[in-house]
Length: 152
Picture: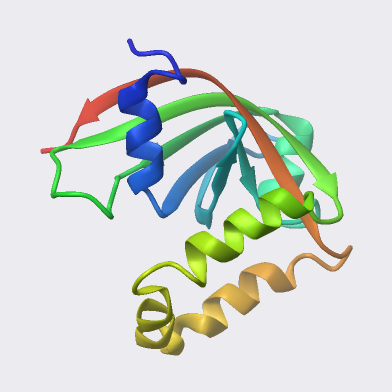
């Protein structure tokens, strides 16, 4: 099992745009949602608030599992499964993390094309972020384990 700081894991994270974040509800039921993320100093940052279902679940159960597909790279028969401990915070992350988000999702090659191609789905993003009635927030995930899982 590779370490979360293994070069193969780091490279796979760089090729991944969306993390499928799995959490548990207060009753222990699983919940998974796709979310954008960036890595800064070996920590993953996700901008979603403490009032979202993901945020509430993390407050109760900080253990998370993330599945990443490395979709910006060549087609792979593997996904990266990353386990970690998450904390949910009110307010935006620091400027360095915000700049990484802007560079990855809005200023990277093809980002505008992807956003425009998915314009019909923007309402889904608004519905999700509309849960955040308490304002902006972010999740900080410290990876504890990583492994590659074969996809049929």
